[in-house]
Length: 116
Image (cartoon, rainbow, N blue to C red; front, side):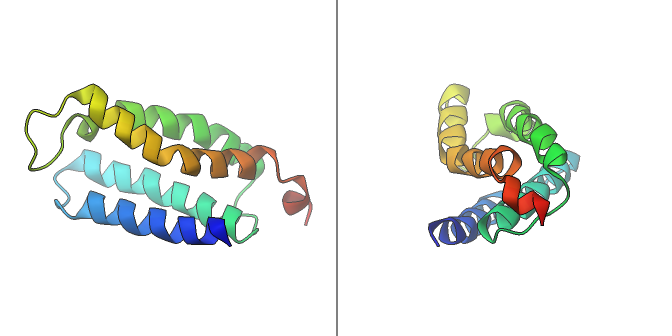
């Protein structure tokens, strides 16, 4: 139940903070595509439903982490000039840790789910 609540909160808050400033270019559209794939994994994990294959999630997880570190918009905070990059990155990664844990568990620690 906790994971279902977190999934709803994570998706809602992420979409709000990503869409509130508006889509400002191709990087924002690519970021949304990466996010929606991750959201599918979160929903699959939370509701114990297989989506795609475990190998996909095993590859997606490190790529998603790299994307979140590399993504160009990680260097800016709309409306707050002068925020250091390291602070934005630290807060963003810290907030995403439960997301990464869920995807890790989904890909590596749910063998019964994938046997169905």
